[in-house]
Image (cartoon, rainbow, N blue to C red):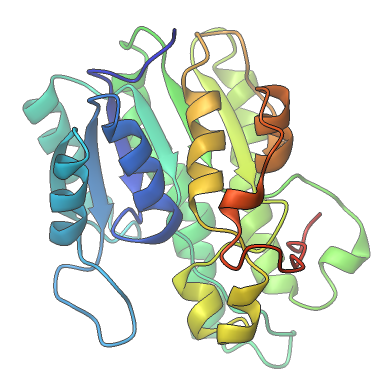
Length: 272
């Protein structure tokens, strides 16, 4: 059986939500998890810090390194990667999970928010990949996994929130390009949820409690990521995977346990 035991994962935005869930799933195997996120002090509207995530990952059976990282900062990313390599001897997996969102139209998107989305989503993904790749190339079965949607050039995905779509598709274009550039050397894939996932963004920005009721837990994304990240080098790359499809292919038939409210009607995620 494939396992992540002893593998080192560098996960951006891993102090909460999907990033943390992926770290916890890897920790069950005894993986090393680098929590590269901004939240060092408790936030009134956001649960968890890099240090509380570290405690949870260690309690789950893994080793953890908490690093204060704003993916907009080249210096902070470089320092965190250097610290990860010094601590664990290398990096096997990069998960580009950190993301900024604003579902606003052209006239409702301040340039400050436009810049934030593009700097975190597209530029942050490219930067973290660029800094990690020299170490990934030395790994036995290296992976880059971007939490980004399948590329689809239909106007309906752009019209309501063109700035956000551009920023997320930028992450997906990194998959398209890097999978080809590093073909046979690094598995590079994207993963996206079929339904809305209960995260801080949903709780605070995208409908709150009502939307949460029709959402799935981050665990479904973590389990799907695990399936992808345990595939051998060269076996699976350049794919825009969807969580439920990945798990069905792996033999999962019952998805009820992933619902926040069992039996509730699920909201489909946008971009699908």
